Length: 218
Image (spheres, rainbow, N blue to C red):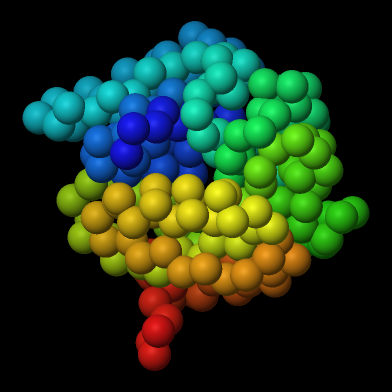
């Protein structure tokens, strides 16, 4: 696609899964972390798992990841605003994709938490007012994303107040085999999209599956 992607907090399952899928699509990816050594280790582990694929994945600290063309926020939701705020200058004018969900586990269910600004994506946008923020990648099962042989098929919702952020995010999704991007409207839609992740994960827990979102009629 001609862009490099940095993933803040990319050492967790969601970040690693997105990294391997984007890299398999030919995108150069930098996994970021507060600990550069931890990021380098995570990147090497992902690449070593797929030795026959030319995966361009490297590790860096979060500042290094924020220096890339497009930046994804994959940190735990509580830490997303603080992480982004510290890097707001580096994110100025860039497409920043928020993929975190505000969730807590209670028994065999996941429950949605309403962040102070209504969604994690809104908090990210407030923390980096000069960035072009979109929200996406919320409903993808991390384990299936990280497994390039899982046969993953899914629709991926995108919402943003910036047309450039919407089009760039959708282009990244469209480059990944098995994923279909869907424009879900303005960043206001991030609140229900994030909250529905709790229902989605609860269904997967109860039925012991790794299902994906597929919308008929579109």
